[in-house]
Image (cartoon, rainbow, N blue to C red; front, side):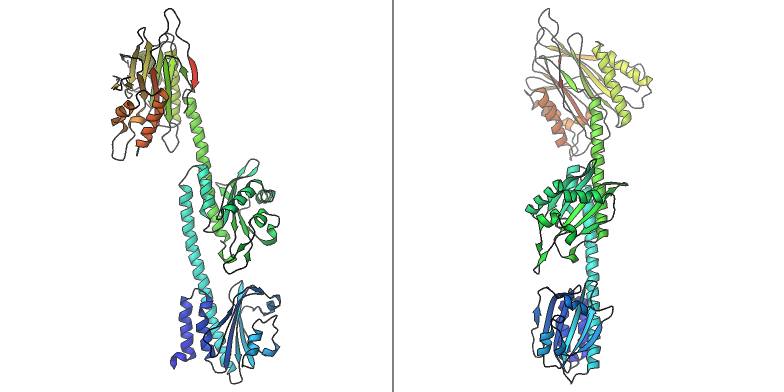
Length: 602
């Protein structure tokens, strides 16, 4: 029948080769047509890894439907003489003369009915080769058998090459997707510790079984993160990363070398990877010793550390150097961005701290507290400020303000405004005059930004109440939380500071009772906006009323936290200054009680 012809069989072999994921899947389409060839009694195939490691052997005899397969990996050093050159090699051999140390299929071929052997040995790839051996008798057309062997081998090699190519393309696609995902994951955080953990986790177990990350510090590599698919081995990795002298010496020697280095076998002697991790079991049996790669983390022209991957998998599942370099580049940039962000954040917070009072005055008469939270994710220093100033007459002046914009210029105006107002109020200047003189100073300095501010003085009275004198320059009106839970807004007005010359400011006076609390704040509090569009300003009185009876610290912290939780949009800083009047007054003929100082937290 036509289907049994060699041409039909070869066509079917090509079709099977186009669909195969492994060369071994072609066995049925190779062995059966050869056994249908006149004079062929047995077909034996062997697959070798490198020169002399037999991966498997498969044999099928005439009249049998089930092949015999031997799959145990076995080292046969003397078989290295059979390794082919660049082209398939066909040979005609006497089965009686085959050496079993070289030919593991010798016994099968000697037991077959044929009186000679035709073999074709061919290279599959850089690491592996194979042989097809046919037992034939005198009736076989040896030239035709040889031709068919060469044709079948051509299909097998083409199939294997296609499988490798498709595998490389699949791995390249998977690697590209992994690199893209790695960039997204690592770039999604600017927290240094979180970024380091993400870097260690992103490749485990996708490309490696374990990972170690070290940063380059002044005294050398410093361990910062580790992960492994197995919990016990992760502990071993962490210990090795912190304390192992072998690893420390390796990383120190690497220096600024940009190439990824792979270490295995004897190169890992004395390392923690050989002793702590040990060999892993391969899927097909046998032990897989660890392989280690070290890649330098380089960002913006400088080395910032290294990433070490540990593999306990077969060689064909190891990533290539170019992929590891790409991953290391992305990891280095993510880590460097996080480090730079942290450096900038610390610098901004330090500058912000110096623009605000480090301490607030403490007295039995007043419970004072403040809260400040940075809202700008870009970490430009903000323009919000506050202060509390004891005055010569025993009163206290509370001030809060907000410079338009952010950055260095806003910071300069913030310092000018707070220190100017503080100096004037300490000398006993009334709030309206202090604001007018600050406005004049801003105009003389030709400031390009305006600011808002409010000053409130609290003066104890003999009857246990206190006079609240408020003067505002375009700033949000303070609120008063009465001891009965009601909330009222302090009347205020006045023009912005730094806009017009010769501006005067009027004061509003009202009386507060023991237990009443005055709350000053910047517009970052009121303009926090929820997803539905409502501003925190609309709920602020009710939220403040709910804090009735609380001390000043709790009120300041709670309102700031509630505004941040409420906020879906808006990134302004939030500053609050809270003063609760106790009702205590100095005795007749006594000087006002001395003010003490306590540190206020940013």
